Image 1: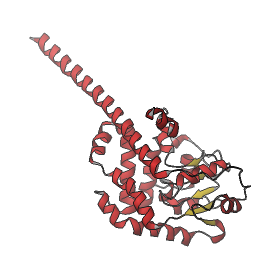
Image 2 (image 1 turned 120 degrees about the vertical axis):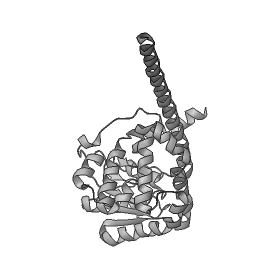
Image 3 (image 1 turned 180 degrees about the vertical axis):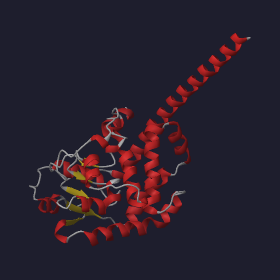
Image 4 (image 1 turned 30 degrees about the horizontal axis):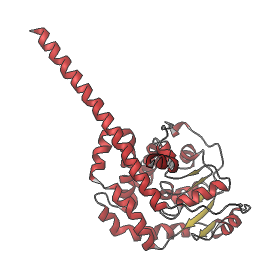
Length: 284
């Protein structure tokens, strides 16, 4: 019963991976809305709201559960932004996000200045929470990134868990400037949060920017976007509970894959050893 409930709430974690190499893709719909608040600021609710308004799809971290290869390009974006390796501009974003009319949440929020510059025709939304409320909520992500067993699972499951773990650790290192522990991230998290919002306000024209307050409903959002107010309630996703469930399900999926890979590796080792013994035996 619990498994069926999880499946209903998080179908993306039960789907077969789409296995799409975004390097081969192109833009097929216009990019119209950039919601660039930090993660844990109502991003799942904003994703649902924008899709109700017709902005399909709205890219969110959830998309990486459906196509883990996305992380390959996000790592290239990190390298270009923070290490000066290669370039990552509109052409690259069009490949990675070409199927989307809007974005919210990480990884996109890490590249707010780049996206604002790449899509000057897109409107920008900024959702900000009280920094202490955000910090408490974001701690879930910080703690999960540095769980010791995650490295073992990532090693045994490099194609799914490994990609995710590599990106998350790169994210913490590049945006927060730390790599080793969640405690180090916590020391700088509040300042990083404030700096993120200050930069977006500084570089975005006022007429292009909506500072949306959680709980204010459809009216300010629809007025800003020039859309009629829907006859449904504004979506409110219990993001803390949903995130905990996704982390749990993601761990389960990674562990299952790691066990399968380890078992397969053990079988191969046994076959190789047996073949070696057979050859040695027959040489006597």
